[in-house]
Length: 142
Image (cartoon, rainbow, N blue to C red):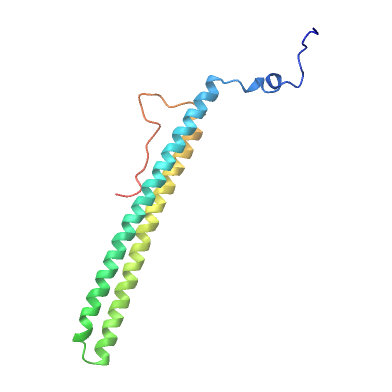
């Protein structure tokens, strides 16, 4: 039987440099912690946005109902015009306030993700110590 020679194109020889190392394990663990924190932050933000949108929808429907209940009380076209102008002004003010609130929620989320990214860069690929969490995470909304 012929002697088996090492194949220069063998799998083990080509990919031998991919053996696990402690440093690679630490970097992978830290990356997974960062991904977990970022996904948690995005999930909390999406949940906060949905809660806010639900409150906005409920408030909007209540305002429409209140406006419709006032319609039978209006006697002149001027009364109708005044009621429409007041409703429009209130609606625009509410819309601007709500848009500002929503942008603040998303801004807190992006700031939290930026914090995670900067923390990841500062850690230099080292895993966080087990006794402390990987780092502070900003809340999307309360």
